[in-house]
Amino acid sequence: MPQTATLPRRAARLAAQAMEPAQPEQLRRQCAVYLATVLQTCAWNLIRLKAHLRVPLAMLSRDALLRGADWHGVTGDELRRAVRLDQCRTIEDVCYFFQETLLNAAGHARTDRAQPALSQRVLAWLETNYALPATLTEAARAVGASVPSIIKHIKRDTGKTFHATLAEIRVAEARRLLATTALDLSCIAQQCGYCDQSHFTRQFRQAVNLTPGQFRKLMIVTEAEVLK
Image (tube, rainbow, N blue to C red; front, side):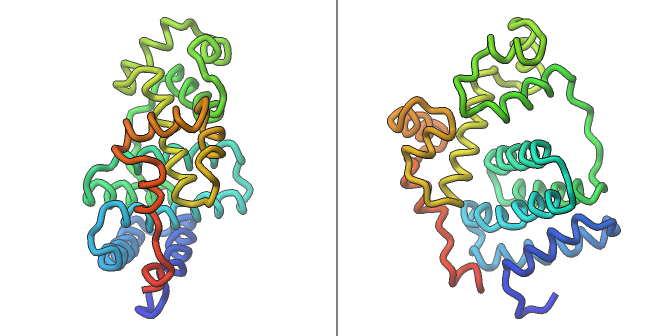
């Protein structure tokens, strides 16, 4: 790619290539070049790296929708990617996740063991209902299973409780909104299913060790940094 190309243009090009039937090794090389450029731009800062990589990941969703993919399926995938990106604790983890996401979009990722159907149904329900008072009883009614079965399968297949999984999804969506929108904190709290802004701040700080306002400041990537 031309060295003079801006990062947003490179991100758009990489996302578009991931939607085409390219060879896996070719896509890996292109991904490596992009990651090297981003790492240099963000000075190997983990939080800024995640902020930059949200751009091509969002473009994957945009391109999928423009190609006629199902809206709910695409937005569910986008939320899952946001959760996984948030869970990455090292730069190496972020880079591996990013590459595997692109390869998966191109149909070249290694296939993991299929998740049991019940856990998958519950997770899908949570990803579309996290803004509501999503209770175990409501989930059980929606997926056609008993509450004990949901508790057992979610814990076995994810290693987390139902409520911990819901909290993780809400925090991931809050982080996305804080990083990509100018919505005020009370609006984000409402959209993510928190009963009020105080509850949102308390739960967010517990999960991230930062207040929502502090996190938003850290996630700001200036125009000069993006265009480097």
